Length: 142
Image 1: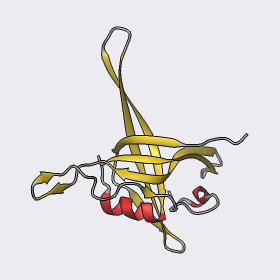
Image 2: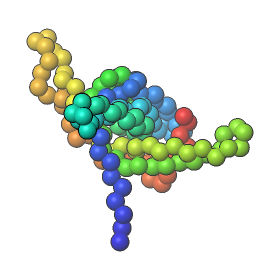
Image 3: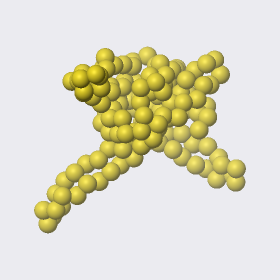
Image 4: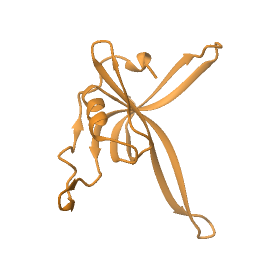
């Protein structure tokens, strides 16, 4: 039986995307994404719980993120979880779990001369082929 590794998130960027160019002019963007869940506890009090996710986008999606996304942008990200490991300068093994996105939908309302419009800037459903083959997380510069 084959496994499924699929993640779907709607949240706000915690900061502007950090975009790097790798060898071969391959763009990679990285940013924190906050998702917030609101629920009632046992006493009926509303409680909000925020989770932070590290999102990595490659090639065309990274370039779109650089051009259109900024801190607090509301986005839908679809992708897969990827855990990578490395040794720090003291020889300690470190791990990071990231969402490697392959679909991006910008959910912010676009501003025009008449105020916000109902569309998403014509950027719906972008992605699909922007992840390189192999395991690119091994070469992330950050």
